[in-house]
Image (tube, rainbow, N blue to C red; front, side, top):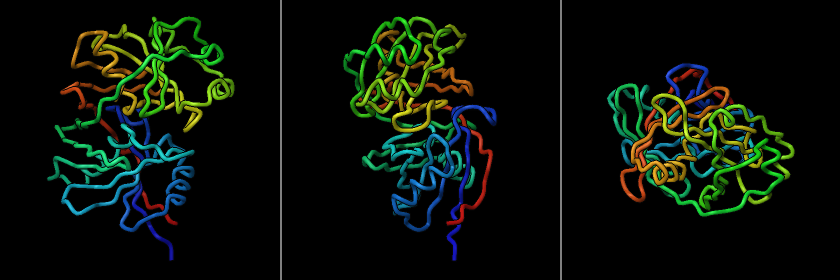
Length: 272
């Protein structure tokens, strides 16, 4: 007898379907093995799929995230996507607690059509970017380069958001240019009205070639730009082909709020 798993595809960090970042959401009533969850994530082929299971507290859920390649400890867009499903399925619910594999307690709140997520803040430290990596990205000059240890992501700041938008990396060369990172985040000050900074995230080492909109990178990106712009509250735009947006607010030295919207585009049953 096959097990039917309630499954969704949700476009996160957007107010329109078919934009933002699509995530899979699987609601579990029985435990799955890591291998099964990895196989499902690979089958769905999205940048991440979230698997949730209710724990003792009324509004508390264990959550795990898998890319098609590996487990990811923390994922912003899949958290937002999962929150959208739970809030829509439970109209009286206005808060959620997620516990991830690192035992982080992620507090989620609903504000009308918007969802606010409480995430940790991480630091960056200076780190040089290999020339081969810059060539693979198509970047000639950078303003700064830094590394975040928790996510193992290399951050590159460049001068122009227009250059950022038009980057067309050679992903095979990019993957061969570094062997100790999970991804590279490229960012620049935004020239768009109502936005402070922009970014794109490339991660052929651990996921898909490009993650369309990435909440998890803002765990260190928000503090990076807060220091440069002297702002605690900022608007971020991800200028990938699908595009997406979010509001970020630093509320302490260790806590960050990420607020945006999501759209459920598919509901079904996964049979395994």
